[in-house]
Figure (tube, rainbow, N blue to C red):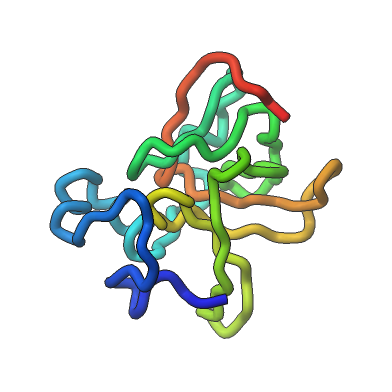
Length: 147
């Protein structure tokens, strides 16, 4: 797999939602821009989404794409919102070889925004832990399919 952003600046692939850096800066606050567009990470334990327990959908803060149903959220103890699986078509993955290790990066399928990483140490039924930056998402309360 290839990185989406050459040098974390310019998309290497086309996505249905595309903007240049200046347009993204106008649409996002500085912290969201840092995480979604520059592959940053928010400090653990800082996202209000960690405590979100209502039924609803977690969506991309960059473009509004539905990413995760609330029924797949679990407490991982990591300080970041964690999920067992994304909604169908919500996310894509790429290989991340930064920080002297190989991880699987998770990005929004529609805008390519960096969301976090997925690890093979989650609970049943998938055994996966989608460890997401809360700043990269917003929460829309209401019913979901909660697969």
